Length: 283
Ligand code: C2E
Image (cartoon, rainbow, N blue to C red):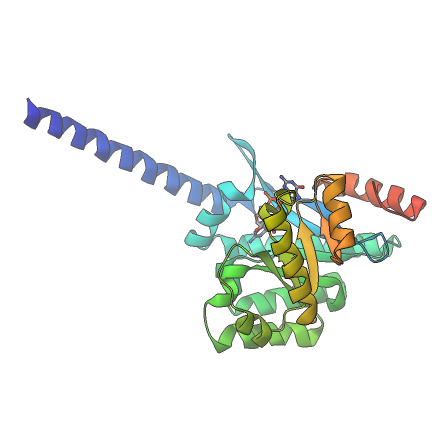
């Protein structure tokens, strides 16, 4: 009986693995078709400059309208896209689409920059440079209007090539920010070596600002960024008291649901128009 049971659990285990592999293969195939099928969408979240109370940029955040599973967040597909290589055409679509949209807003008179996310894998493929330069020239958005957010862990891999890749774009006017700052293992030395303009404090720190130890860490991150001559952004501001703390401690900019949730382009534009009419905080 034991032998039979072992046999059946082995069979069960095996079929479970098969099902997972199958799902994974299906997901990879569907992801590769997502661009051609027009299933990708971008939402835009405002970045608020605390120095002048104005929205200075829109961060493009990717969503996948999956044919059976509905609207998917990046956490459900970015890792598979990276591992399968589908991230490359997807990244190309994102930068092109986002640059086109922000150019349209600039033509309507909104003084706005764009922030896009780059995954670890995209960052280490030299052709992201050509991809970015092509998107800039085809859409006519100035390089000075583009900020590329790279995950903290991406800057720790690889030696000189990433620095040279980044320099090619910063020489053209593009700015780099380090995303999820504080949760990874980046070294200050590495940050100093690379052409980085901004650190974005991970939202896990902002969520726990009412804890005094955590507040000390965040204020230290703000001071450290300024000592390194970097701007600093607090991500995930949801409550007025978090905004007040960030204002009082000299944080340069914030983003979060209190300022504005990620919105489809048309709604984002309405929010921009309302904020411009008030000439003040979009709260
Ligand atoms: P991220 O770059 O750190 O983006 C900020 C994330 O925090 C977004 O999640 C945003 O919706 C969320 N967020 C901002 N403020 C708040 C808040 O006040 N409360 C809460 N609960 N959440 C807030 P999202 O859109 O799910 O994106 C997650 C991550 O996926 C991004 O983190 C980024 O690393 C990645 N990602 C998004 N779009 C792209 C893309 O086009 N390409 C690549 N490679 N990665 C992307």
